[in-house]
Image 1 (spheres, rainbow, N blue to C red):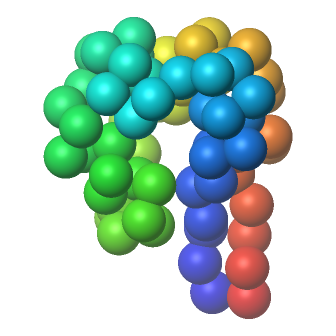
Image 2 (cartoon, helix red, strand yellow):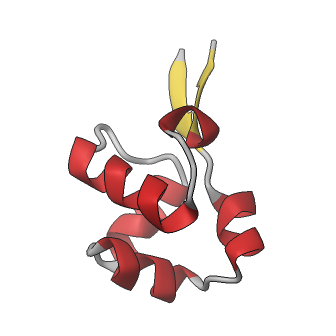
Image 3 (cartoon, rainbow, N blue to C red):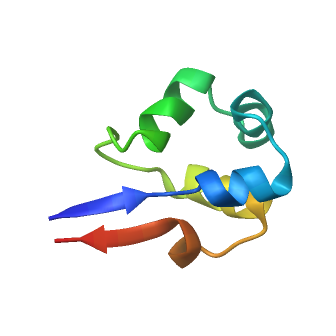
Length: 67
């Protein structure tokens, strides 16, 4: 079982590069790639909130459960 972080479609719709999104939410590109590639073991609520603000979405729009 895994929680998947999937924001690529939303990022592309907003016209943001990975670098721009990382700057906008205040994390390094390396850490954003960890999230993007689902290698993160945890996500801070502050990072999740910043992602939602930058992408104008709700947490459920970027998080999903895969058994």
